[in-house]
Amino acid sequence: MSVRERADLVQPDESAEPDEAAGWTAAVRRRLVRELPPDTMLPDTQPRYVASWIYVFGVLTLAAFLVVLGSGAVLAIQGPSWWHTSDIGHFFNSLHLWSVELFMAFMVIHLWGKFFMAAWRGRRALTWITGAVAFLGSIGTAFTGYLAQQNLDSQWIAVQSKDALNAVGIGAYFSPMNFGQMLMWHIVLLPAFVGILVVLHILMVRRRGVVPPLPLRDRPAQAGAEAEPGTVSEAGQEAEAETEEQP
Amino acid sequence: MSAVAQGALAAAVDLNGPGHYLNWGVIQISAANLVIIGVMIVVFVLALLLPFPKGRGRR
Image (cartoon, rainbow over all chains, first blue to last red; front, side, top):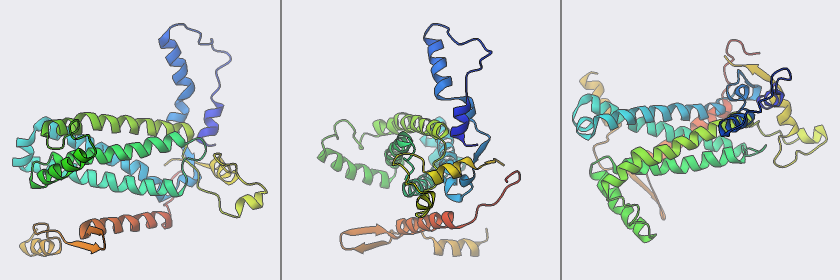
């Protein structure tokens, strides 16, 4: 049974007292249970078509993101004098850099896979949009990270990008040559922005289910019907109906 | 790591010199970035083609 089908099966228990409590907390509770049912949020099965390497890159991106956040937190706690001068500091500095490299590479491969799969099908437009905006936010975070390196590279990038941002009229508000401002963007604002979007993205993936693969070109003709745009195709529903236990 | 192995690795991946760039009209890209993009495309194609292992409990 697919994630979506199971979500549809989540019905209020007839024998239980209806939740009619007043107040905003009760209203929020009802809304959360309705919009994000626990069975859908933490499923123990996935559709059969998810057993493909191309579906692995989303969770690889998430794993790399957690390493980025963890190594970044250690760097923030210890400070530049530590990461520039000690062996362990160099190690965490490198760990932060290489986890970002993997994060961006995995995210781009995930993006390619979802683009060619038309992953916005089946009321998944917001899932696609949050992912795309998180990708743009990640580019901004990586850019401010380059500026925080405190070496010749970062000075070069700061001066060049300052010219570019001045040319588009935002250099006074977002100044790459202002190290303190860029560091705050890098370690507070942009990680919070990307982190919130990633959480929303995952919640929406859980709510709508993983997008099924596109049907083969001759499948709808065999089934005698063309899939409606924006809906899960017949072949997709068929694939979604075949589920399997997670390892 | 032995000195010989370190020397061989340093010769294969020398990060201390200036980068190598490729030019094609108005397009300029570093060899390192081009290699990364190539590896990503290879990984993407392999992810589509390689069979996914069947774990225990899978039907």
